[in-house]
Image 1 (cartoon, rainbow, N blue to C red):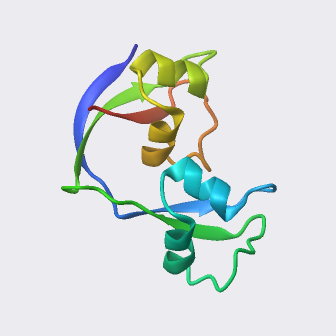
Image 2: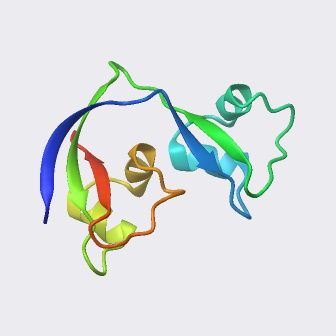
Image 3: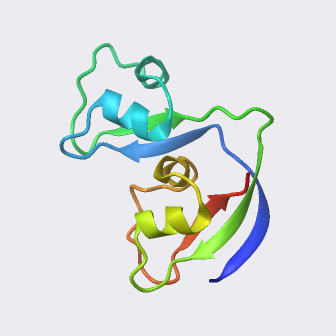
Length: 115
């Protein structure tokens, strides 16, 4: 495993591109936020969202500083195998990595939060 520890000051928000079948409730669950927070941050008047629409996912951190290991994806890695390998949930992986751009290609780098 290619691992490097690094210090990262997490941004307050993350962009997310809506995919077919997404709902605000589903997105909120994946990222560990409330649907009402998604609506407020994106100034949405209703729960209606559309594929290819970009929304902002608010992040809430206690002290603003998170430490990560850097992991280079290996051949045949899956999100499930990576999360099991690092003993973290898939939700945690999604929280700190832009899954809308993630393709699980070899040598693509993931940030793995250190607890």
